[in-house]
Each structure stands twice: as structure tokens, then as C-alpha cells.
Amino acid sequence: MTGEGPTRSKARDRAAMHAAGFVRKNGLWIDLRNAGIIPNEENSINQLQELYQKKYLDAPAEYEFEHDSLFDEVWRAVCRCSGIHAVGSGPSKVKAKKSAAYQVLRRLYKSAGIDPEGPAEGPFS
Image (cartoon, rainbow, N blue to C red):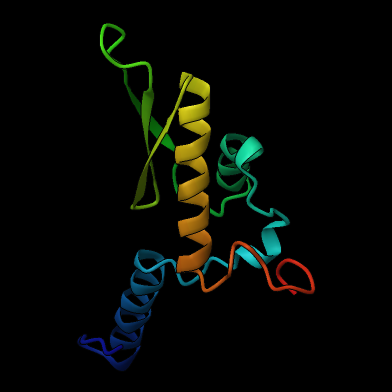
């Protein structure tokens, strides 16, 4: 990163601001290995909320639901979180929400370079 400014100090400050913005924008400060969470579909909604509360995520997950009770017995949920979104479906609104949240969790971990399934000898070793 480079910065420009009337003085060397100002240029250095601007370069640091650009670097910090790049790190924030690309999620490079997140090390989910330290979060103590192993993605689990049953607890996925709470796990996303916990990551937000522990400041691993900038904003809480947002959900949208779709269901046509006349012709469709399947609920669909869209989960959006930290620029990642996923669609889940299930026979109930809660199951669809859990499915979508779990997929987002898996993608968050993969984007951080972590295999959400974990290696054979144990998760996240």
C-alpha cells in the first residue's frame, strides 16, 4: 500500500488507512479458528449470532422467507451475512432458516481458509 501526503508522516498515515481498509474489506483480520465454533446445522442460527456478538462479523445475519401455502409445502429462507448469502429449504420455517444459516457458516469458514468439515484427525487442528 502506498499513500500520498504533504509530509512523510501524512503519507504513512494514509497508507496505513488504506491498508486497514483493505484488511477490513477482504475479511483478512478474521481468524475463525479462534472463535471456538465448529459449524453445526442444528445450532447454526445461534452460531452466526455468536460470531457477531464476539465481533467476528460486522453485522448480524439477515433472513428472508418465502412460502406458498397453497401449492408448496416447502419453506425457503435466504440468509445474508458479511457479503455471503445462501438459500436453505425445509418443511418448516425454522428448518429452512437453519439450513441457510449453516450454508453461510460453511462459506464463511471456507473463505477464511478453514475446512468446515475439519480434517480426519479432528476439526480445525
